[in-house]
Length: 212
Ligand SMILES: [Zn+2]
Image (cartoon, rainbow, N blue to C red; front, side, top):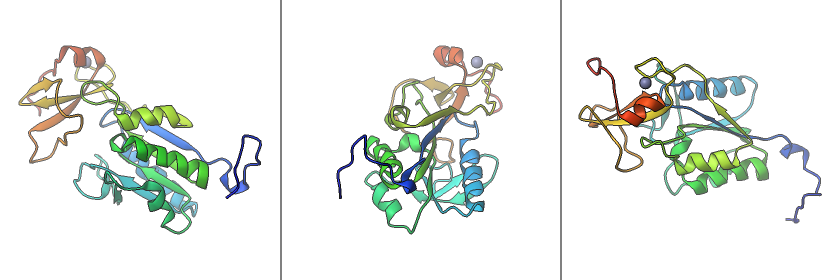
């Protein structure tokens, strides 16, 4: 392999591939958009791979809250994403749902897929955890992505302000300490998550919870 420099010509096949990161709180339609994007690219004859981690279904699937789904490859902690994608024939793009949960190394592998192999990568995920602190994977995406988009699908706090942050709720009360990743909103988990505006995330006010 020859060494490349800033002055090396860019091979045609590699020109234009992008790493894009779409982020937003829960319920803002990230998985729905991921599946729509996969559908649109597939219709144009492009070959894609769909990855996820900790999907709400608990399985190797991307599922959206409005009821659509697609089979996916579960990203385990030690999975090498470059090797995975290159093991498939002629992949044009990769959809990465729940990318906030991928490791920093795996996010860097996504950048490698774009830069070294001309494969488009569309990553979707939360930006910050229940403490309003960035997930390491999301932080790396902010640092490396060619384009970053905040998803604008309206998601509201109970007070009507824009929902920006995810609160972790245990036993009806918001908690601010604990493991960064705890799966919630399942039948077996005592943990649930609620989207709040910044003001109510700071005060821990969950509003009237009788509807939960
Ligand atoms: Zn609020």
